Amino acid sequence: EKISIEDLLKSGAHYGHPISKWNPQFKPFIVAKKNGICIIDLKATLSYLDKAVNELVNIAKSGGNILFVGTKTQAKDIVQTCADECSMFYIVERWLGGTLTNFATIKKSINRLVMLDKESSMIYKNKTKKERNMLHREKLKLSDLHRGIKDMKHLPSALFVIDAKHELIAIDEAKCLGIPTFGLVDSNTNPFTLDFPIPGNDDSIKTIKLIMTYITKSIHNAIGASNDKEVLSEETKEIKEDNKLNLESSNDSNISTTDEKQDKGVVENS
Image (cartoon, rainbow, N blue to C red; front, side, top):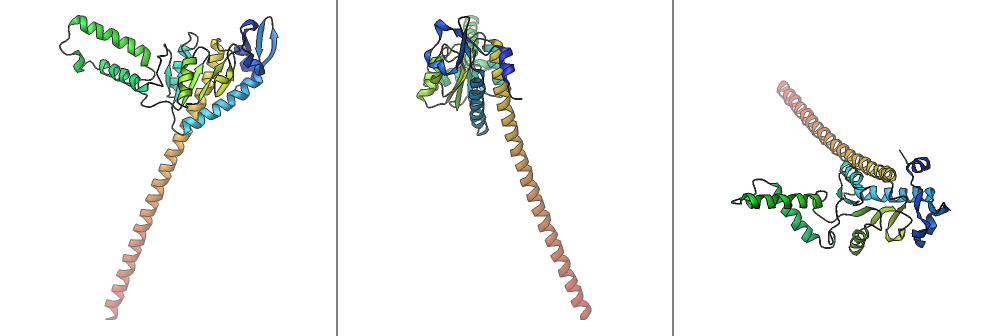
């Protein structure tokens, strides 16, 4: 179901930052200033949300992967849960500089984690108890950093962030590589640092959950529908091939029957 303005109001999506902290670039998305707080235009939120979701769905349907980033305390659990639901990648701990621009090094670190995950790995052979404990601590540290991108073999096709100001390094890296950027942006940030900004309260857990759930369900449904179409097309192809084989078999049977009748007629005449 589509999100309504009432849903956004209930979640507190219209509350921005205090006027003293607002970014002038955010002015097009502010409809009022009440009690020293910027009030965000929820009509603009819905409009920009639809644009972002449509683009993300197209990326997912074409086989692209989306990297969700939310290292703020309010966003961590929600981002991880929602990314898992739509089978996408996520980063909810500290963003490591070079995660995108120096992906080859990050992949080495991920490979190291894969080795540490295997208890039978040669890396544990002939190690003392102290050395094993050190390796175990290293595994826990790498697991926290890379658990959401452990299976990411290539650079993502899109980046989605919660709080563009907080995740500015990630956005800059994506822009360097030409990766489209999406995200929830509050009134203290320049929304046009993102290709597809969604103006809204990025500190409210309810708002983050509402928008993230809507986005990930849209992606999940799109991928599911796409997979169903592929299955149907494969089944249709198989049915057509079976029909073709049955038709050929039927034709062969008719031909052989006709030949038998002709041979029988020749014998009777003789």
